[in-house]
Image (cartoon, rainbow, N blue to C red; front, side, top):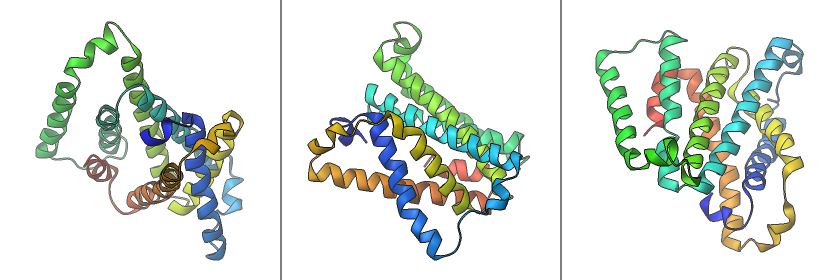
Length: 229
């Protein structure tokens, strides 16, 4: 993402991530005859939950890349780890998953490490609130959005397959970002950057597809702890 932001803006980058994922996944599911069940989409509660999950994931994508633009890859990657930790808490308190004392020790160790990592930048957030601080705040909000998406995703998997939910969310995100894209800088992309853009689309399919499928098989708290690695 950092390699792309030198040429194209965050919104256009995010649009291509989601649209490439949607364009690659759609024909695959058509051939496999595994498109989302339209009957379920007519149920207001399920349609609202699916839409909310898509909006929150779009918020996560957008806020993360805007935050990355203002901070650094290492700071962004550490701050976004708040997301799986919040999902871990959701797994315990919302989904009533078991959690041992030893696992709580690991959770508090992670929280302490996060504070120590950003200790020298706390002034950027709470005192001066410069561009770096704004970027950290955006990434924190991105983590909040991702947690909301993941919670709803876990609930949706009681009615949909992981592929059905992700295809709907990819297309929703594509349509949401399209009106705000700027395609005028695409001719400035190098061959390497086109490769990076293609990788981002594939990464979106693989990472979020695997995440959604993992939620089918194991507890949210275990998924979140694995993602933090």
